[in-house]
Image (cartoon, rainbow, N blue to C red; front, side):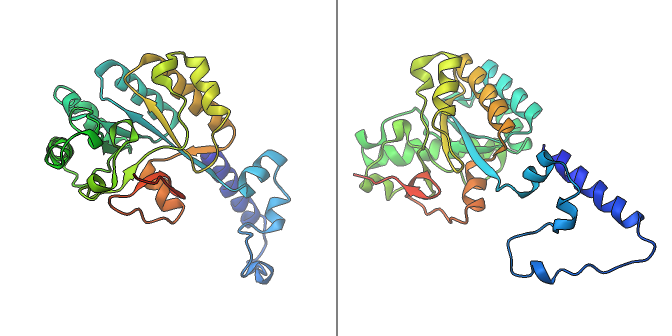
Length: 262
């Protein structure tokens, strides 16, 4: 839709320019300092659907996927996201990386964000500090070797980490603001409904690319929300769009909401 609107606007501007017998500099004084970016003369020539799409505030949401990569389900998910021009964030488990390196390279190439979900999906608040560092660093080392990137935001398994152990984390940590419990439902329609009933612009949605039903649900969620004007971005992009600079060792439920640590 964004590409269609941009094309229509460009074509309209070109048509207006071609129809002029001599160049006329438009009077933009009415728009200086205001919120309008498109002159009313242009908006008036558009149909209602295109006009609303041009003037409506964009709605952004970040889909996140835990516990992969898994060869069959993650590959199918990537196919669907590519077809829909939707970005996502994948918090991967280190133990899942060997044998799935091509999936990680594909994530990077296709514009997705890759995050760290520890090496063995351990509850970080239940292990000693040395084990916390090892769980994070082992996965970081594998990811760096495969992708060449240096920094990978952390999602603590189960979303749990305490203040003491959070001080050991050198990157931002990401929780979520929408959790349909897809791992428990294992039902596409119920997962889709759980997300659509609660999601708002700026949300971070938790899903798992380990389950076929979750992949089916995710792609339908993208279809349904794109039809409502949502744009799917990575978590990092969502923070940038909202003008929030995430801090290391801080657990975020969304760019605007920090989750307290115990």
